[in-house]
Length: 298
Image (cartoon, rainbow, N blue to C red; front, side, top):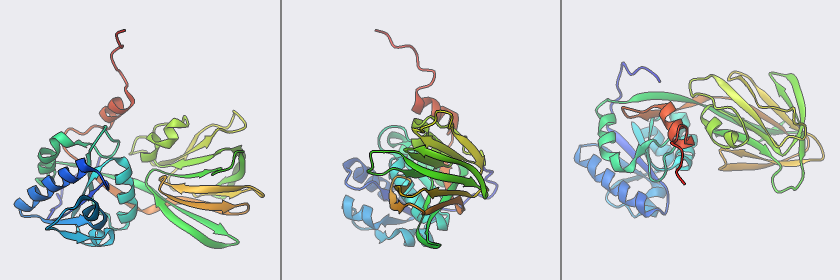
């Protein structure tokens, strides 16, 4: 967590919600009215406004939110947060997450305590946390044909194929291995508790300056996950004649062909998350992963 010696002022607040969700629409309307009564300027993301039927508030694109908002409150789940974070990361607008269902890894305010927790943040009672992001680009015959960012992970996988793919991995120009597998997950500490965790990757605390590399169903059982420094350049070359697919946070994708090179580096941008009082990463892990549960009675 970062020190908050200089508290932010939140005059203009953007609301971004999961589309086509009645629960989100109700919570968003309640929160928008509450914020306006407190004297804040409220922006509703245009897709959210269209899907939730919110009226009477300024509608703004994500680019406009990035340039105008002092704070963006995301109502939904981690998927909504990922999409928002990736698209406005260049503006470094702080994000606050309200979870509409199960406990989220990033949307940590439960809906039932939404207003009181938002008030805490607006009045300066919060912890600020910076999360690293990844930049991914695909080079084909020396030309860039795809570029995107990821907060969770960049995944190279076999796509629709029913067989393994083969690719060569280099870190900072040094040969690491040729891997035959279903693919490779390259994750941030934030993404270490997502897809990478289900592939037996390590959990990285958000403060760890590292990037995880987790093989997907490797042909050789000796291929294990490895964590490298967050300043490393990871280069993945798909071996001909294989085809594959690149995914960024499971939301942006691109088909790659034999000979294509996937470059992954730490992004110059970061995501700023705000947490209300009482937030604990370890408590979140215990809750989400059901650690220390009492034995079930039969």
